[in-house]
Amino acid sequence: MFSSEWRSAHRILLQNLQEQPPISQIELSVHTDIYGRKTYLPAYIPYIGLNYFEYRPRILCYAINQNLSPHVPWTEDWVNRWVMDLNEAQDRLNRSMLEGRPMPIKPYTEGFIPLVALLGISRNTVNWGNHLPTCIEDVISVTNFVKFSTSRDASSSTIPSIWWQECGLQYVSQEIQVLSPDIIIGFGQKTIEELRSVLSMLGTLGSRIELLGCRFPARIPSVRSRPLSRKESKLWKSHILPLIEKMPEPKEDSYHKRRIQNYPGYFIDVLTSWSANGGSNNDHLTKP
Image (cartoon, rainbow, N blue to C red):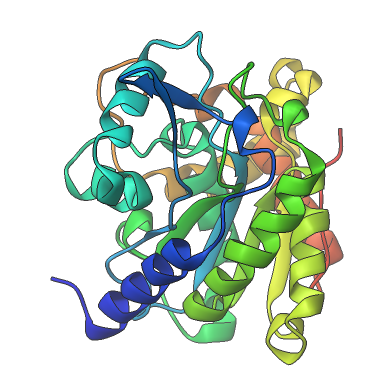
């Protein structure tokens, strides 16, 4: 089921995770009480598709942070589960997917990350002499740049600046070296800035990786409301709708609910922005 390269990468990433010191200001992160003692969630390694190392181009996707907001119903269940099993907590993304549970990264389950990843692959298949994958989740790797959530409200605006720096040094740089992606897709302006910094630090390895970026549609209120032009409608039907067939069907529950159909303009902007800019190691953020 798992290739030797997958197993090796999985082992190295877990080992690196276990060797890192606690993040600064850990007291601000999500925790629960066990026998009257605060227990904090650890960092975690990326989800790695079963065929990630066999398919080119390799796509590594970075969202912002896990956003374990205390007001949503699944957070308490997940936190309580993960603090009781350190191994599962550190490998929570792979464990969730392999066991048929939702990946605990909301933009992934809503469909935004898989579809943007497909857009990234579709513009590069000719360069690699390859075809689109049968199922996108088998060939990509996904994680958050910041491996922690603040216990206050877990939004990205509450992330301490030191967390970005330390996660870049302790986790992200190692992830990029081990997973050796051809393309990295970052979501959010701050994520792109920090990814550019890590890639610069990695020297030759970083310089050969194409960095693509886009904002999350939730941060672009006008995208959902604006109608598509005739030209955009044709682009949606010819270049984007066929890609959705490569995505796994969402399960019928609140966490898996797919929202991409409400944001066609967002994906049109991503596609046209990347096509217009091109080039390696640039951040192509979709227009607001």
